[in-house]
Image: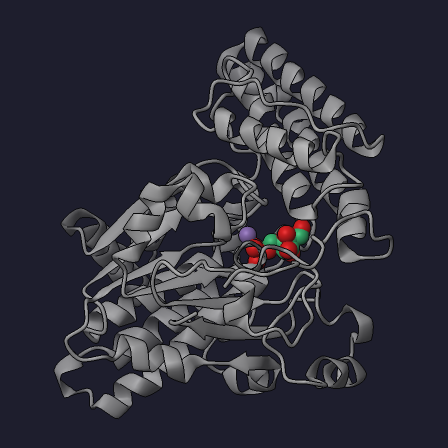
Length: 437
Ligand SMILES: O=P(O)(O)OC[C@H]1O[C@](O)(CO)[C@@H](O)[C@@H]1O
Ligand SMILES: [Mn+2]
């Protein structure tokens, strides 16, 4: 459905908004942490690559400091210059935005989605322009800590699922439905654990993921799980599910468990995982993070965990799990542009029976990161983006939400402990679904 006039984009130009706070404080502090990681590793670079390694790292630090200065002084966004294949796409978009705005975009005046994505792309450019550190992931250690510090919830979830699916032929339709409902919620709450909202400080899963479900239940403010179940449980339908993955660490583990349950119960026969092709929003998962996660699980001394580590390596090998990357996921476009900008990806997703979008940034990109009224229907906020039936599992970490009932947002704001911050605290969540526009 075409909108006559769309709402404004969220932007740091709205003082006091979460976008303003993010551009002013949150993303500069993430950038400073990247600089710190490099500075702390000079000794290691020297050990590994000699003086040349240290010089290379200093070059990256210099470029990142320059970027920090550009942000803080609200400089216009510069075209990209490195050799990555996505440079054209980024620079074309920059030209389009400049033409529409009548001036080049800048940090505090332009769309928040655009400038925040641009920061991560410029971090990548600072590395691409080096010689030794081109593939260095400054967020890797944090992502690894996210998994390693979730040992106990991972063990209890692995045992639970192994037990529940031990003999799938004995499971009734009702058993499968109950397990589906539980694991979709575990997967939803896994999204609390990202490292970008916390500015990169630790944000690990600490509780037993199944046990905590009932106490978290009231915090799911839109829950269309039944519609997702009806879709996935349709007899005779194609059995491909696509997961648009968000964060590494416990969240990724919860994705894998969800995917495993779909296969074990025959709700799906193949799952495609869509991963980021470059370090992104601190904790987003890359192919390397995915494979590292499977290695860690396989090496675990815990029987259920290592069982899944082994099984999932097999799944990647036998093609029941397919790992995909596409530069579109790390570009600044919202998803209504996918069909035009990345028709190959759109056509691929159209072959899926159900697409599951994980997390907050995906939600922002699905809805265009606009200042929607909270009561606008989810299907309308998609603005025509529907390659196949899709759903979103998202904890709220941006001041953007659609699909609420009249008065619901006001009621939550009155009742929420965190009052005016409820939309960005990660404590509230939605499960939204659409199969028809
Ligand atoms: O990992 P997620 O759930 O996409 O969250 C990313 C975070 O980064 C942000 O884009 C803000 O910087 C928020 O929207 C969200 O807090
Ligand atoms: Mn993320």
